Amino acid sequence: MQHALQVELTKKTFAHIDADTTDMGAEVLRHPVSEYTCPDWFSREKATLFRDYPLFMGLSGLIPEAGDYLAEDHGEIPTLLIRGDDGIARAFVNMCRHRGTPLAKGCGRSASFTCPYHAWNYNKQGELVGLPDKRSFPDVDPAQEGLIPLPTLEKHGMLWVIPNPKADNDQDLEQCIDAHLAGLGGELASYGFGTYHADETRTIERRANWKQPIETFLEAYHFNTLHKNTVAPLFFHNMCLFEPFGLNHREAVIRKSIESQRDKPESEWDFVKHTGLAYQLFPNTIFVIQADHVETWRVFPSKDRVDECVIRFDCYVPEPVTEPKARKHWDANIDLAFRTVDEEDYRISEDIQRAYLSNALEEVIVGRNEPSLGHYKKSIQQAVVKDQ
Ligand code: FES
Ligand SMILES: [Fe+2]
Image (cartoon, rainbow, N blue to C red; front, side, top):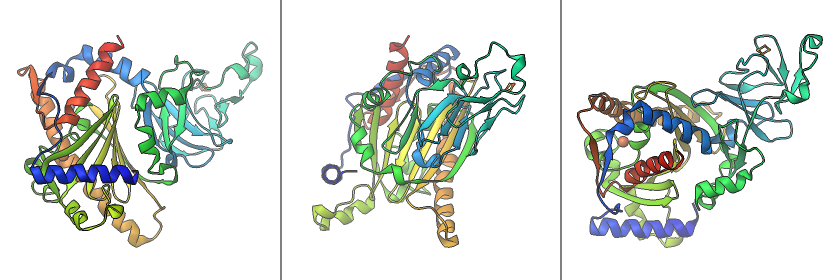
Protein backbone atom coordinates (compact mmCIF):
# COMPACT_ATOMS: atom_id res chain seq x y z
CA MET A 1 0.00 0.00 0.00
CA GLN A 2 1.28 3.45 -0.91
CA HIS A 3 2.90 5.14 2.09
CA ALA A 4 0.80 8.31 1.85
CA LEU A 5 -2.33 6.16 2.10
CA GLN A 6 -0.88 4.23 5.06
CA VAL A 7 -0.31 7.56 6.85
CA GLU A 8 -3.82 8.77 6.04
CA LEU A 9 -5.41 5.55 7.30
CA THR A 10 -3.22 5.45 10.41
CA LYS A 11 -4.33 8.98 11.32
CA LYS A 12 -7.94 7.99 10.80
CA THR A 13 -7.36 4.98 13.04
CA PHE A 14 -5.84 7.04 15.84
CA ALA A 15 -8.85 9.37 15.66
CA HIS A 16 -11.18 6.38 16.06
CA ILE A 17 -9.17 4.97 18.96
CA ASP A 18 -9.13 8.35 20.73
CA ALA A 19 -12.85 8.94 20.26
CA ASP A 20 -13.90 5.30 20.67
CA THR A 21 -15.59 5.37 17.27
CA THR A 22 -15.51 3.36 14.05
CA ASP A 23 -16.37 3.88 10.39
CA MET A 24 -20.13 3.67 9.98
CA GLY A 25 -22.61 2.87 7.27
CA ALA A 26 -25.22 5.52 6.48
CA GLU A 27 -28.06 3.61 8.07
CA VAL A 28 -29.19 0.35 9.60
CA LEU A 29 -29.91 -2.14 6.83
CA ARG A 30 -32.63 -4.78 6.87
CA HIS A 31 -31.82 -7.54 4.42
CA PRO A 32 -34.02 -10.43 3.21
CA VAL A 33 -33.05 -13.91 4.42
CA SER A 34 -34.58 -15.33 1.23
CA GLU A 35 -31.40 -14.31 -0.63
CA TYR A 36 -29.71 -17.14 1.31
CA THR A 37 -32.42 -19.76 0.93
CA CYS A 38 -34.45 -19.16 -2.23
CA PRO A 39 -33.51 -21.46 -5.15
CA ASP A 40 -34.74 -18.89 -7.66
CA TRP A 41 -32.54 -16.12 -6.27
CA PHE A 42 -29.66 -18.63 -6.13
CA SER A 43 -30.07 -19.40 -9.85
CA ARG A 44 -30.14 -15.71 -10.67
CA GLU A 45 -26.91 -15.15 -8.73
CA LYS A 46 -25.17 -17.97 -10.55
CA ALA A 47 -26.39 -16.82 -13.95
CA THR A 48 -25.09 -13.28 -13.45
CA LEU A 49 -22.35 -13.04 -10.85
CA PHE A 50 -20.58 -16.23 -11.94
CA ARG A 51 -20.87 -15.64 -15.67
CA ASP A 52 -20.72 -11.95 -16.40
CA TYR A 53 -18.30 -10.58 -13.83
CA PRO A 54 -14.51 -10.91 -13.89
CA LEU A 55 -13.57 -13.47 -11.26
CA PHE A 56 -10.23 -13.27 -9.47
CA MET A 57 -8.51 -16.61 -10.06
CA GLY A 58 -5.26 -16.19 -8.15
CA LEU A 59 -1.94 -14.40 -8.20
CA SER A 60 0.37 -14.87 -11.19
CA GLY A 61 2.55 -17.16 -9.04
CA LEU A 62 -0.16 -19.79 -9.21
CA ILE A 63 0.96 -20.64 -12.76
CA PRO A 64 4.48 -19.16 -13.00
CA GLU A 65 5.92 -21.21 -15.90
CA ALA A 66 4.81 -22.17 -19.42
CA GLY A 67 2.59 -25.24 -19.19
CA ASP A 68 1.49 -24.55 -15.61
CA TYR A 69 -2.24 -24.97 -15.35
CA LEU A 70 -5.15 -24.70 -12.96
CA ALA A 71 -8.38 -26.58 -13.66
CA GLU A 72 -11.46 -25.65 -11.63
CA ASP A 73 -15.06 -26.66 -11.85
CA HIS A 74 -16.38 -24.93 -8.73
CA GLY A 75 -18.08 -22.16 -10.68
CA GLU A 76 -20.65 -22.31 -13.44
CA ILE A 77 -18.18 -23.06 -16.24
CA PRO A 78 -15.41 -25.70 -15.97
CA THR A 79 -12.30 -23.60 -16.43
CA LEU A 80 -8.75 -24.44 -17.46
CA LEU A 81 -6.18 -21.71 -16.99
CA ILE A 82 -2.84 -22.33 -18.74
CA ARG A 83 0.32 -20.31 -19.16
CA GLY A 84 1.35 -20.52 -22.81
CA ASP A 85 4.78 -20.84 -24.37
CA ASP A 86 4.62 -17.10 -24.98
CA GLY A 87 4.18 -16.45 -21.24
CA ILE A 88 0.57 -15.37 -21.66
CA ALA A 89 -2.05 -16.80 -19.29
CA ARG A 90 -5.20 -17.97 -21.09
CA ALA A 91 -8.36 -19.52 -19.76
CA PHE A 92 -10.54 -21.99 -21.66
CA VAL A 93 -13.65 -23.99 -21.11
CA ASN A 94 -12.22 -27.22 -19.74
CA MET A 95 -13.98 -29.46 -22.26
CA CYS A 96 -12.59 -31.40 -25.17
CA ARG A 97 -14.12 -30.35 -28.51
CA HIS A 98 -14.73 -34.02 -29.45
CA ARG A 99 -17.16 -35.17 -26.75
CA GLY A 100 -16.67 -32.68 -23.94
CA THR A 101 -14.37 -34.52 -21.56
CA PRO A 102 -12.50 -32.27 -19.10
CA LEU A 103 -8.85 -32.22 -20.15
CA ALA A 104 -7.21 -31.68 -16.80
CA LYS A 105 -7.97 -31.75 -13.11
CA GLY A 106 -6.40 -29.78 -10.26
CA CYS A 107 -3.13 -28.08 -11.04
CA GLY A 108 0.27 -29.02 -12.41
CA ARG A 109 2.61 -28.51 -15.36
CA SER A 110 2.12 -30.15 -18.72
CA ALA A 111 3.80 -29.94 -22.12
CA SER A 112 0.40 -30.36 -23.78
CA PHE A 113 -3.11 -31.49 -22.87
CA THR A 114 -4.24 -34.90 -24.09
CA CYS A 115 -7.87 -35.80 -23.63
CA PRO A 116 -8.18 -38.90 -21.44
CA TYR A 117 -11.04 -40.27 -23.60
CA HIS A 118 -9.84 -40.53 -27.23
CA ALA A 119 -6.56 -38.64 -27.02
CA TRP A 120 -7.27 -35.44 -28.91
CA ASN A 121 -4.33 -33.26 -28.06
CA TYR A 122 -4.19 -29.49 -27.38
CA ASN A 123 -1.13 -27.32 -26.95
CA LYS A 124 -0.58 -24.76 -24.17
CA GLN A 125 -2.28 -22.10 -26.27
CA GLY A 126 -5.44 -24.23 -26.47
CA GLU A 127 -4.99 -25.16 -30.15
CA LEU A 128 -6.00 -28.63 -31.32
CA VAL A 129 -2.73 -30.13 -32.53
CA GLY A 130 -3.44 -33.86 -32.47
CA LEU A 131 -6.55 -35.63 -33.78
CA PRO A 132 -6.09 -39.43 -33.91
CA ASP A 133 -7.60 -41.08 -37.01
CA LYS A 134 -8.10 -37.74 -38.72
CA ARG A 135 -9.48 -39.48 -41.84
CA SER A 136 -12.67 -40.30 -39.88
CA PHE A 137 -13.28 -36.59 -39.32
CA PRO A 138 -13.02 -35.35 -42.91
CA ASP A 139 -14.93 -32.10 -42.40
CA VAL A 140 -13.30 -31.22 -39.12
CA ASP A 141 -10.70 -28.48 -39.42
CA PRO A 142 -8.42 -28.71 -36.34
CA ALA A 143 -7.66 -25.00 -36.71
CA GLN A 144 -11.33 -24.31 -35.90
CA GLU A 145 -11.61 -26.74 -33.00
CA GLY A 146 -9.32 -25.24 -30.39
CA LEU A 147 -10.50 -25.02 -26.78
CA ILE A 148 -13.21 -22.42 -26.27
CA PRO A 149 -11.49 -19.31 -24.91
CA LEU A 150 -12.67 -17.32 -21.91
CA PRO A 151 -11.67 -13.65 -21.58
CA THR A 152 -8.54 -13.63 -19.40
CA LEU A 153 -6.38 -10.82 -18.06
CA GLU A 154 -3.22 -10.78 -16.01
CA LYS A 155 -2.57 -7.42 -14.39
CA HIS A 156 -0.93 -6.22 -11.16
CA GLY A 157 0.29 -9.81 -10.69
CA MET A 158 -3.34 -10.95 -10.53
CA LEU A 159 -5.25 -13.31 -12.83
CA TRP A 160 -8.84 -12.57 -13.86
CA VAL A 161 -11.27 -14.57 -15.96
CA ILE A 162 -14.78 -13.82 -17.20
CA PRO A 163 -16.20 -17.36 -17.08
CA ASN A 164 -18.62 -16.90 -19.94
CA PRO A 165 -17.93 -18.73 -23.22
CA LYS A 166 -20.30 -16.32 -24.95
CA ALA A 167 -18.48 -13.24 -23.69
CA ASP A 168 -16.93 -11.01 -26.30
CA ASN A 169 -13.28 -12.05 -26.57
CA ASP A 170 -12.43 -8.89 -28.46
CA GLN A 171 -13.60 -6.55 -25.72
CA ASP A 172 -10.98 -4.44 -24.01
CA LEU A 173 -10.66 -6.58 -20.92
CA GLU A 174 -8.17 -4.29 -19.29
CA GLN A 175 -10.66 -1.46 -19.47
CA CYS A 176 -13.42 -3.77 -18.27
CA ILE A 177 -11.43 -4.86 -15.20
CA ASP A 178 -10.27 -1.32 -14.45
CA ALA A 179 -13.93 -0.32 -14.51
CA HIS A 180 -14.85 -3.28 -12.32
CA LEU A 181 -12.14 -2.35 -9.78
CA ALA A 182 -13.46 1.22 -9.74
CA GLY A 183 -10.23 2.92 -8.66
CA LEU A 184 -8.81 0.09 -6.56
CA GLY A 185 -6.33 -1.01 -9.27
CA GLY A 186 -3.52 1.39 -8.31
CA GLU A 187 -3.69 0.30 -4.69
CA LEU A 188 -3.54 -3.38 -5.64
CA ALA A 189 -0.61 -2.65 -7.97
CA SER A 190 1.34 -1.10 -5.09
CA TYR A 191 1.81 -4.48 -3.37
CA GLY A 192 3.87 -5.99 -6.19
CA PHE A 193 1.93 -9.27 -6.25
CA GLY A 194 3.74 -10.32 -9.44
CA THR A 195 6.68 -11.66 -7.42
CA TYR A 196 4.66 -13.74 -4.92
CA HIS A 197 4.85 -17.53 -4.87
CA ALA A 198 1.90 -19.85 -4.38
CA ASP A 199 2.69 -21.77 -1.21
CA GLU A 200 -0.36 -23.73 -0.18
CA THR A 201 -3.95 -24.31 -1.13
CA ARG A 202 -6.84 -26.00 0.63
CA THR A 203 -10.34 -26.65 -0.64
CA ILE A 204 -13.27 -27.40 1.64
CA GLU A 205 -17.02 -27.75 1.28
CA ARG A 206 -19.35 -26.27 3.84
CA ARG A 207 -23.11 -26.38 4.39
CA ALA A 208 -23.79 -22.68 4.04
CA ASN A 209 -24.91 -20.37 1.28
CA TRP A 210 -21.79 -19.19 -0.57
CA LYS A 211 -22.08 -15.60 0.63
CA GLN A 212 -21.85 -16.51 4.29
CA PRO A 213 -18.17 -17.52 4.40
CA ILE A 214 -17.42 -14.14 2.77
CA GLU A 215 -19.60 -12.13 5.12
CA THR A 216 -17.87 -13.49 8.18
CA PHE A 217 -14.84 -11.40 7.20
CA LEU A 218 -16.85 -8.22 6.87
CA GLU A 219 -17.18 -6.89 10.42
CA ALA A 220 -15.21 -6.72 13.66
CA TYR A 221 -18.35 -6.61 15.79
CA HIS A 222 -18.09 -10.36 16.48
CA PHE A 223 -14.47 -10.44 17.65
CA ASN A 224 -15.01 -10.26 21.42
CA THR A 225 -17.62 -12.99 21.42
CA LEU A 226 -16.86 -15.48 18.66
CA HIS A 227 -13.07 -15.12 18.82
CA LYS A 228 -12.68 -14.35 22.50
CA ASN A 229 -10.29 -17.25 23.05
CA THR A 230 -8.26 -16.83 19.87
CA VAL A 231 -7.61 -13.59 17.99
CA ALA A 232 -9.81 -11.10 19.89
CA PRO A 233 -7.09 -9.98 22.33
CA LEU A 234 -4.97 -8.82 19.40
CA PHE A 235 -7.58 -6.43 17.93
CA PHE A 236 -9.66 -3.42 18.86
CA HIS A 237 -13.17 -4.77 19.21
CA ASN A 238 -15.89 -3.40 16.94
CA MET A 239 -13.62 -1.00 15.06
CA CYS A 240 -13.02 -0.91 11.31
CA LEU A 241 -12.03 1.34 8.46
CA PHE A 242 -14.12 0.94 5.34
CA GLU A 243 -13.88 2.29 1.81
CA PRO A 244 -15.97 1.22 -1.18
CA PHE A 245 -14.60 0.88 -4.72
CA GLY A 246 -17.65 0.27 -6.87
CA LEU A 247 -18.98 -3.15 -5.93
CA ASN A 248 -15.68 -4.02 -4.17
CA HIS A 249 -14.35 -2.59 -0.95
CA ARG A 250 -11.41 -2.32 1.42
CA GLU A 251 -11.86 -3.11 5.09
CA ALA A 252 -9.25 -2.86 7.84
CA VAL A 253 -9.67 -4.12 11.37
CA ILE A 254 -7.18 -2.70 13.81
CA ARG A 255 -4.48 -4.51 15.75
CA LYS A 256 -3.76 -3.09 19.18
CA SER A 257 -0.10 -3.01 18.18
CA ILE A 258 -0.84 0.05 16.04
CA GLU A 259 -0.39 2.12 19.21
CA SER A 260 3.36 1.54 18.79
CA GLN A 261 3.27 3.82 15.74
CA ARG A 262 2.33 6.90 17.73
CA ASP A 263 5.91 7.39 18.95
CA LYS A 264 7.41 7.00 15.50
CA PRO A 265 7.77 9.57 12.72
CA GLU A 266 5.09 9.36 10.04
CA SER A 267 7.71 8.30 7.52
CA GLU A 268 8.00 4.98 9.40
CA TRP A 269 4.31 4.31 9.96
CA ASP A 270 3.26 0.84 8.84
CA PHE A 271 -0.51 0.56 8.61
CA VAL A 272 -0.44 -2.83 6.90
CA LYS A 273 1.54 -4.54 9.65
CA HIS A 274 -0.78 -3.34 12.39
CA THR A 275 -4.13 -4.18 10.84
CA GLY A 276 -6.10 -7.06 9.44
CA LEU A 277 -6.45 -5.70 5.94
CA ALA A 278 -8.87 -7.30 3.51
CA TYR A 279 -10.25 -6.45 0.10
CA GLN A 280 -13.57 -7.85 -0.97
CA LEU A 281 -13.10 -8.45 -4.68
CA PHE A 282 -16.62 -8.69 -6.02
CA PRO A 283 -18.30 -11.10 -6.09
CA ASN A 284 -16.60 -14.05 -4.40
CA THR A 285 -13.11 -13.31 -3.10
CA ILE A 286 -11.77 -12.15 0.22
CA PHE A 287 -8.21 -11.02 -0.35
CA VAL A 288 -6.30 -10.68 2.92
CA ILE A 289 -3.01 -8.79 3.13
CA GLN A 290 -0.92 -9.97 6.05
CA ALA A 291 2.35 -8.27 7.02
CA ASP A 292 4.41 -10.99 5.36
CA HIS A 293 2.05 -12.91 3.08
CA VAL A 294 -1.28 -12.93 1.26
CA GLU A 295 -4.28 -15.19 1.88
CA THR A 296 -7.18 -15.47 -0.51
CA TRP A 297 -10.54 -17.09 0.18
CA ARG A 298 -12.56 -17.72 -2.96
CA VAL A 299 -16.06 -18.99 -2.40
CA PHE A 300 -18.29 -20.70 -4.98
CA PRO A 301 -21.92 -21.72 -4.85
CA SER A 302 -22.53 -25.43 -4.93
CA LYS A 303 -23.78 -26.68 -8.31
CA ASP A 304 -27.33 -27.22 -7.19
CA ARG A 305 -27.83 -26.42 -3.51
CA VAL A 306 -28.47 -22.97 -2.14
CA ASP A 307 -27.14 -24.10 1.24
CA GLU A 308 -23.77 -25.49 0.17
CA CYS A 309 -20.55 -23.93 -1.03
CA VAL A 310 -16.97 -24.69 -1.96
CA ILE A 311 -14.22 -22.59 -0.42
CA ARG A 312 -10.76 -22.44 -1.90
CA PHE A 313 -8.04 -20.99 0.33
CA ASP A 314 -4.66 -20.01 -1.13
CA CYS A 315 -1.61 -18.70 0.63
CA TYR A 316 1.07 -16.73 -1.24
CA VAL A 317 4.49 -15.81 0.15
CA PRO A 318 7.11 -13.31 -1.03
CA GLU A 319 9.93 -15.88 -1.20
CA PRO A 320 9.70 -19.62 -1.92
CA VAL A 321 9.83 -21.58 1.33
CA THR A 322 12.80 -23.94 1.15
CA GLU A 323 14.35 -24.23 4.64
CA PRO A 324 12.70 -26.75 7.00
CA LYS A 325 12.62 -24.16 9.81
CA ALA A 326 10.83 -21.64 7.60
CA ARG A 327 8.49 -24.41 6.40
CA LYS A 328 7.54 -25.18 9.98
CA HIS A 329 6.91 -21.52 10.70
CA TRP A 330 4.64 -21.12 7.67
CA ASP A 331 2.80 -24.38 8.28
CA ALA A 332 2.00 -23.35 11.84
CA ASN A 333 0.91 -19.86 10.72
CA ILE A 334 -1.27 -21.05 7.88
CA ASP A 335 -2.80 -23.74 10.02
CA LEU A 336 -3.73 -21.28 12.75
CA ALA A 337 -5.27 -18.82 10.29
CA PHE A 338 -7.21 -21.55 8.53
CA ARG A 339 -8.43 -23.26 11.69
CA THR A 340 -9.57 -20.04 13.35
CA VAL A 341 -11.65 -19.10 10.33
CA ASP A 342 -12.95 -22.60 9.70
CA GLU A 343 -13.63 -23.74 13.25
CA GLU A 344 -15.01 -20.45 14.54
CA ASP A 345 -16.40 -18.39 11.65
CA TYR A 346 -17.50 -21.08 9.23
CA ARG A 347 -19.06 -23.15 12.00
CA ILE A 348 -21.33 -20.20 12.75
CA SER A 349 -22.04 -19.82 9.02
CA GLU A 350 -23.34 -23.40 8.96
CA ASP A 351 -25.41 -22.89 12.11
CA ILE A 352 -26.94 -19.74 10.63
CA GLN A 353 -27.72 -21.52 7.38
CA ARG A 354 -29.57 -24.33 9.15
CA ALA A 355 -31.60 -21.74 11.02
CA TYR A 356 -32.31 -19.70 7.86
CA LEU A 357 -33.78 -22.78 6.19
CA SER A 358 -36.59 -22.74 8.75
CA ASN A 359 -37.91 -19.62 6.96
CA ALA A 360 -38.85 -18.32 10.38
CA LEU A 361 -36.97 -15.06 9.99
CA GLU A 362 -37.69 -12.72 7.09
CA GLU A 363 -34.93 -10.18 7.56
CA VAL A 364 -31.58 -9.78 9.26
CA ILE A 365 -30.34 -6.48 10.62
CA VAL A 366 -26.97 -4.97 9.69
CA GLY A 367 -25.78 -2.26 12.09
CA ARG A 368 -24.12 1.01 11.11
CA ASN A 369 -20.97 -0.44 12.70
CA GLU A 370 -20.90 -3.11 9.95
CA PRO A 371 -20.40 -0.93 6.85
CA SER A 372 -18.49 -3.56 4.83
CA LEU A 373 -21.19 -6.15 5.38
CA GLY A 374 -23.93 -3.74 4.37
CA HIS A 375 -22.01 -2.72 1.26
CA TYR A 376 -21.48 -6.34 0.24
CA LYS A 377 -25.12 -7.34 0.67
CA LYS A 378 -26.28 -4.30 -1.27
CA SER A 379 -23.70 -4.86 -4.04
CA ILE A 380 -24.82 -8.44 -4.61
CA GLN A 381 -28.46 -7.41 -4.66
CA GLN A 382 -27.78 -4.52 -7.03
CA ALA A 383 -25.77 -6.64 -9.48
CA VAL A 384 -28.29 -9.49 -9.61
CA VAL A 385 -31.29 -7.23 -10.03
CA LYS A 386 -29.57 -4.92 -12.54
CA ASP A 387 -28.48 -7.76 -14.80
CA GLN A 388 -31.89 -9.35 -15.18
S1 FES B 1 -13.83 -36.65 -25.71
FE1 FES B 1 -11.85 -35.88 -25.93
S2 FES B 1 -10.96 -37.08 -27.42
FE2 FES B 1 -12.96 -37.83 -27.29
FE1 LIG C 1 -14.31 -13.89 12.42
